[in-house]
Image (cartoon, rainbow, N blue to C red):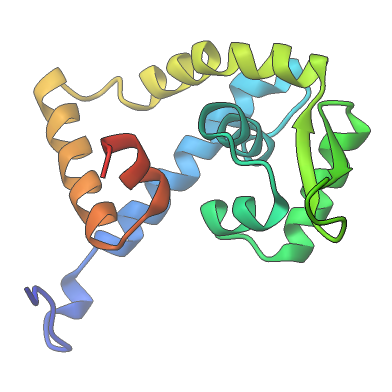
Length: 156
């Protein structure tokens, strides 16, 4: 279904609103993660590894829409913080496998609690029904686009 035309595009704020909301979410997560010494971007890597079993840089790149250079730098920082380790795959020595260290796992276990606090702050202006509607609409968009993590979460 087409909702936008070149004629009405200048009145469309959807892209701006989605982008600004994502930036706000990351700023809030940054604030909540600061005492733990990681950023919102690093939070995303750890939570995806812990919750979805993603264990290769390539999978993380796909799930987070990052290029391999950015991901390498991110993984370098997490490795320096001793939150994850890189290991060669036993099946294919060319492939790197990522493993949470004990400290990384300890932090990953805390992330749902910290993330819930951050998202409660983000969604504080919404009524429960509004939040449900917003989540439903965003899921619908992401499922239609074939987003792997959303599809995994909803069991499709």
